[in-house]
Image (cartoon, rainbow over all chains, first blue to last red; front, side, top):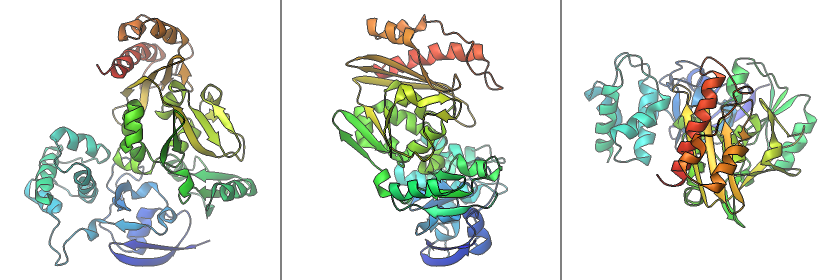
Length: 156
Length: 266
């Protein structure tokens, strides 16, 4: 039976109904139509579905929408400036070849922003360790690491 | 995923009442194992009781020489806790080594301990530090808690609310991690306390266990070399595509040595 669900997504209050078994990522994509959050593996390994739940990066394919009842959520659509300009981390990914096909990018960027929040001046080693939960099959990660280093500086 | 009824518990008592009322009700902690199992239809509970809204089950506090950690405290919170980092740094190291950042932001101490995955990290800490598992009904000693692969002493209707870890003089954790999942192929937590030494091993057997021969050797001489010569029998150890039982037996000694070195700050 559908259950009423309320949360704040990208600064706006959202109310909808969802089946208890609805995953948060499906709720975000199918009901809120925010398709920037991707489903890569659907097994909590690739991190393409990473969003911020009350400020912390989590995998939205590995939790129920109902677990986010009353929570504050930020998706990749919620990080751009009011004028639609790219977030410094997004700009850094573009400038440093942090993506090729782009499928993993929303998750990479959301993880990277969470990482910089905790490590304002991350070393290469820290970046590689912290991005452990985000897989990219195109870039070989070098461009991503450079992008996060540059993004961290730009965010500082 | 099969359909189920969802309940957000308001308190431990509420969760316990709903747990006994459901036909095949299950508790949902952080869900980092359970949600995946539901998606693969490996689990099909009638009811899920979400513990995520119970504030009394979260947090770390020091109480009478023990660190008492709420069952719903996430791995990331344990890893970042100043109390944990000061009084038992090995537990912070252990928590920080679980899965990846996103998993650590959702996964919980209680969920991990209750699931009793043979390759989970926390069981090594529960056994190695001689923790007490506190439920809504009783306290269960570490040595009585893990009964086998995914099997614990928890009775139907019983909910882990806290885990109390006695603060040791020294402790260290070393893990040989699966490079993809970060689960422990073998993980060893060594703790030196006023009462002696405890060695807790995870990943190697069906459930976490102690190694009395190593404990004895470390009481005599708390040094990495003291455990290096202790031979571990592989006969009851796990063997899978990641590592044979013989290899795991070898790794127990290597990880124990590294854990002692870590405890000594080497």
